Length: 407
Image (tube, rainbow, N blue to C red):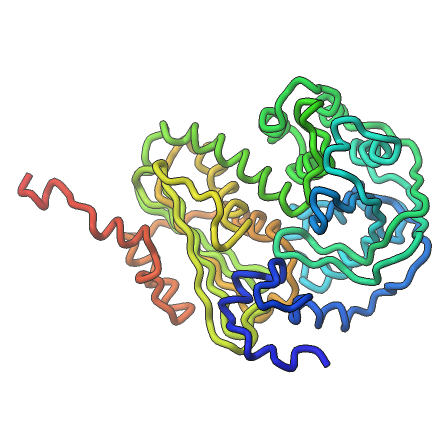
């Protein structure tokens, strides 16, 4: 029987782990096990035909040998939306889950180093990813693993299995992606930065994951969940180098957006760049259950950059759209993001929803008087005062001003 001793596991442990690190000592996550057991998907399949958006899955288990291969729904035609999280913002959790969990995966086990000199199979996967439109494909399984793939970082994937056969029809390639795929002299970082703004962020993630970017001899296959954070971080680091020379925002601004069980409260405050994110997993939310609220937070500024945030990839996913916003306006400031996760967020969907919901929030700014008003709004709506948890608040309140010295 599942979850008999679930209540004995501290909620803080589950929030830190999110089903990826097995911090509770169990061989599988008891929370995710509920979703596996309740899934109505046909898990035992031998053969799938459909149109890949295109899509690829790269696992992390067994690294530096990883499972890599195509993903496709049993649907033919224009399936592009299956791989376009930027189009999912107004969709329900059930709609997103139903769509993504129908993405059947096929894979083979490859060394990460094979990307430097791809064999026939990996070349076929690369050809699929370069496609400018959905591609009709066929998967025949040698045997399946009869489980779905859920992660706090990546969008969900449906059942998977080891490949006996993979075929896909020919398709025209995306010329922008193709240019950097065949450029074996440019670094992966520079390729990502050149592609960003000229093609979908999600296409860049797939290319980096499949080992399609970088200097040829140094190309490596990267697990999907790692590539997502890597792209967010590469672009964010570049943007921070630019905005540090921009003038300070002239007044404090407030942004809010609520969607699929997540509430985002954002403020940009005049001053030198800093970024703070607080995640509030409410009692009844996916990782806490009925074991109380858990708050985690991370902070960085120009002097100290966060490399391994306790809240994981959400930190980088939330930062990127705000830095994009700052660059467009030629401003810099001190950023606070407070994310509240409620019990309506019933399935881990990946950090794309953080990135896209924060991006949506930045469309409408409201003026507020001061940082205390920002926290008062949150306290009024959520019944919690986050000021004691905010490093940004403590720094601002402890700053000495010239007027303090009678100047």
